[in-house]
Amino acid sequence: MPIRILFISDTHLGFDLPFQPRIERRRRGPDFFNNFEIALAPAYNKEIDAIIHGGDLFFRSKVPPHLVKMAFEPLIKAADMGIPVYLVPGNHERSAIPFRLLAAHPNIHIFDRPKTFLLETRGITLALAGFPYVRLNVRILFPKILAETGWQNSLADLCLLCMHHCVEGATLIMGQRLYTFRDSHDTVKLSDIPSSFTAVLSGHIHRFQVLTRDLRGIPIPVPVFYPGSIERTSFTEKDEAKGYLTLEIQPGPGITNWQFHELPARPMTQLELHANGIEANDLKIWLKKALEPLLPDSVVKITIHGRLPNDSLKVLSAESLRSLTPPTMNLTVTLPDYRKGRREPTNVS
Ligand SMILES: [Mn+2]
Image: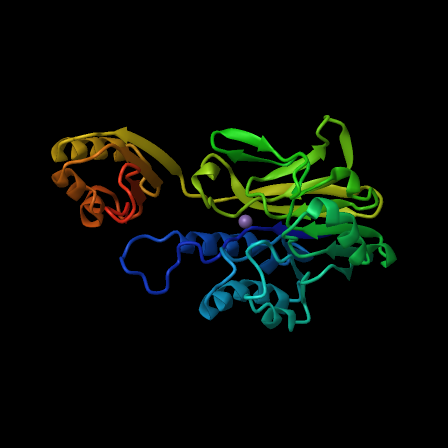
């Protein structure tokens, strides 16, 4: 029987979840927590043997204690059920997050420094080597840090590498284009990954992808899995499916099966209007027409170019915009031609 792994990453918990909101509007924070819970369901149903979190559990490095508790709870629930949890600290996770609270649990294992954990289950010994996010020059440091995990001394049938980094050939959308990581200082060289690993499981890149070839298109011995983020964290992710991965691994063949499980993600739309001098009524009509066809749970960003008469600016007040949108929609209006301080962009709905 293969070992079944649930691999989730970049949960960004705490994103748009103020505990003392200044204005009442739909927040995106609960969507992230919902998806976290949905993704962990196979663990709660005992359909998997271990959970690996690839980093960026939180949306930033400093988080309030209440959020820490909320984010740890689902992982502790699985660990309490006897499912081991392995966590890679990502770029958003530095000393400010009290991982000690988690690490005290006998079933929760944190790669707070280069380490190798052994998981013995289903008659298989699996080594999980990993290290926390390396801020500077991982390209040069990678071989040394990998050696520090001690993976070579582990007597295991299989070995996974868990990290939070870009690897040669990984892609993401930058602007309107697909960008490929090649030889920058923050990119791990494929040739530095020893072929005795079964797979690399990495967080950091929010776009789901599995790398099976190098930059020249030649098949690589160790596939690299990125589950991506569990919800869209920016408009560059608007066309990306969001989800998590399950993998089955076995000595000999290695990965015998893997699956990407899609999670619900909010639809995103970006609109632009060149509206120098537009009348308030015309602006209202334009907004109504633009917003009407959109799905009611859309996350919408409207960029309005030009200088507007005062009456038109009032149409863009939080209150006025709320009256134009369903309560389930998130709408942000930005006015790039207004300097900060003179008139702040309006964030509403
Ligand atoms: Mn991230």
